[in-house]
Length: 312
Image 1 (spheres, rainbow, N blue to C red):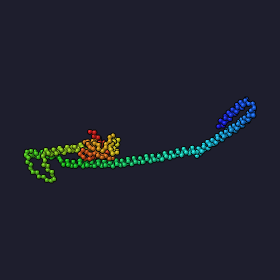
Image 2: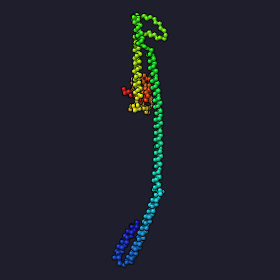
Image 3: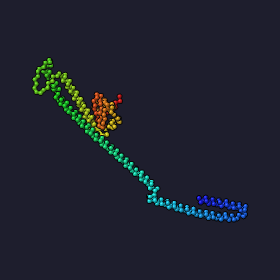
Image 4: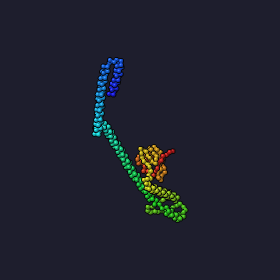
């Protein structure tokens, strides 16, 4: 602003000088006007010097005030009372507290999730324990019933001595000469059993009894082999079988209610059936004749029973 005023005054002085020179050349009588112009010029120069001094003083005062203001702000920042420092600090503190609250809620949710999983696994372990107890009880009961059946069979078979009976029969035939169908009345005493059967019928019955005994012996041998194999199965040999979301997962295949399957148990022929119900410990199936049976998931895991889809 001051520089522009100086230029304007200098321009006016130059124009006045040129005008005075022109006027003096034109009119030599105007010397008094030149004196007045020079006096005005000096006054303008004095005024210009004063203005420049005032401008310099004002600039110095403005610089000092700016310096003092900056120093005050620096001191306030160092003390922590400056608005430029406290406002961002409040925002950062608020964001920090919000993040702490969010992290605490996430931690609580994760804790609840882990606790729910723990309770579910504990409940599943209890159910599996109860199912294993039932399985062991049924296995022991079947074993005892089988032993009772074998004892009863042996008891019924020990009273039959076919060799002695045939030898006695041959002796009687030799004595009688083997001719004629007449029999003499036999008087017996005591609790004896008299068989009024022909020799062919007795031999046929005895052969049937021996076949049954042989079959029972083979079945007992198979059962013993299967039990020995099952007892030797370790935890690493268990097959993957589990209950999940109302379905059965066995060896990478899912089975649901209504699926037609083939069930194979050790020592028995395959069974064609339809799955009617599934729970955490057993699978219920309906056979073709309408009867129902169940397969324990523990049997699938141990390999004593297998199940597969019917893709016909």
